Image 1: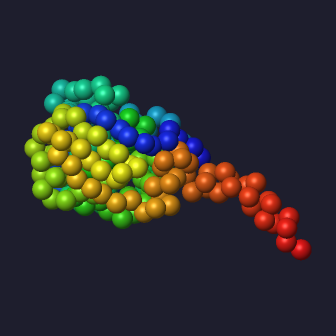
Image 2 (image 1 turned 45 degrees about the horizontal axis):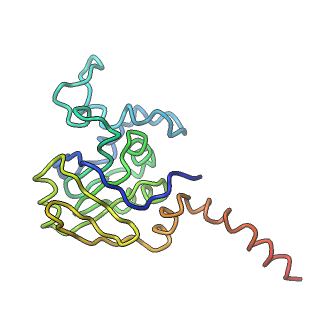
Length: 193
């Protein structure tokens, strides 16, 4: 699978300051009846965005601004905890997010996100607090240098596992990376008895 290669994303942020946002809050279980990523964005944070009649809540920060101008989600600690559903990063990406920033992101969510073109960024507590306190500010996330730039040229670093980083920069998942190596694999195999 391929997706838009990741390089530098500069965007305003959407802030969900709650801690322990789990995958059932990100995409409720009743929307997991599909194996397609398409259209899941409309159900992301469904119970926070819609009332019991299915109408958008006027106080939803997720719908207060155009998703295309806000590609970075800043969330409270322990983001993506709960079940291991791959639908969670699918829904966030389909909504328009390319980056999720927190001080702590659940390991299984992080792994699923990296394989699906969504960059999970874990930053230090002071930077996290500064980003949570200023929703809507412009932030730049540079995957090549693994830095977050915000405010008055303030900067924080983050790390991403090298293979996952390479895949994101190339715009492919792990299988796509292997398929891109097919010529080399076939040359190697043909040289062996």
